[in-house]
Length: 588
Image (tube, rainbow, N blue to C red; front, side, top):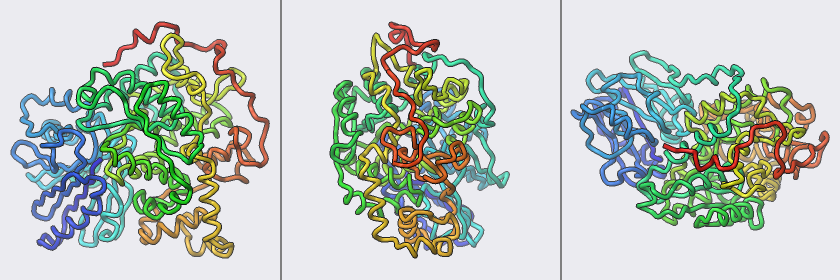
């Protein structure tokens, strides 16, 4: 994962301005420690910090078309770049970089090529022939991007807020699935899938179609010229990523370069639920497993650095980012530069435990749409910035465009949690990979209850964070929080503590406004808090706040707990994958 910075239309085009752009670009060097590049054209500057994943020897950026009139700086991976090169027969490529296709696609198709890209990306493209430029961010916002404005009329774009916050009068998070065109002077949405309108789909559930789509999503992300692995928490999502990657790794270019035994990585407090489950999955799949431990104090000691890197004061994001940040450092020390991760599944399939209380399929589906649209502010931000802090790239197969389209077209009645029918959260995904003849995972792992990452690393982690905040934030400080922090006022001592750290690094009001707010329980949106009256008295983003649902829920008022499901028994009246069909599944 790279770091990009672009400054366009500066009033000052002196050597001092170039030096300042280089200085600010260095703030992103953690994202791209392998090489630095800059292109200057009159009053426009495109800078790049490279993490070399594809074509490490010749893919330095910025990248160009044949006569270098088109310049592009890119953060991301284009998984279908070979297919796109096939459509550009008349163009001459000078590198093996997957991102070089962007310059040539623009030359061939103009601004309307972005939807042709299959991958994760943020890019700034400058056409020096008329000094026009376009900027785009991937469909879901897997890669981060910020947009700012200088007092001199300049417009700025950067992978992280820290590269432009000092020099811009105002800045915002660039919207996912959008394109900015200097010719049109504004943003427009290039990503327009059917689910975006939040209409209720009616496509019947087909487990084989869902499974094949996910396998394709994983396989295309095995594209790499560097060592890689999978983040394995032992939960359903990461375990499925590891299972599919392990099954399809043999025969790939990556296997020829780095071996056919998959590396997996997990972190937790000693004795945590994730460590036990991950070890079991790794043993089952035969991966080369790396288990890392951290203490509550080590996590607390890292908080300031974590908040500086992830650029948020959102409580649940910080809770989950800290162990991921620590694990990424360990992974990078082993020489690994790319990992696959399981983000996105809970948003697509309603996997968070609060979905147990969804009143009907309409509200269930609308909530999944809201969650996917907000991913760039939460899990995508965490997964990208926690890993990029150490020059590690995270890829997320659940957020593949084609997979999302298939999964979000399923009639949401199939996604509803129905204990009376033996359907727990994410049942449609579990069932799709529940193959008796050729099992992907042990049955009890396949049907393990949802555990949020910040909980799964060890319950004492969150408890320790709360205790630490209580020691540093007084009752009087919290009582006066609305006067000190009128925007997104913290309502707990833990939130107040994180806010003070954030404000130290990012004191401008524009920075505060990049962070979402509102009540949440077990990672819900504010709208879904209305599903259960008791939740308004227990607002906490931990999964254990889902009273009456989580097996280790916080003590508090709760309704009747659903009876445990027997995951080994057949589900009456629901489509099961027939034995022997797995062998017939094809992945192209």
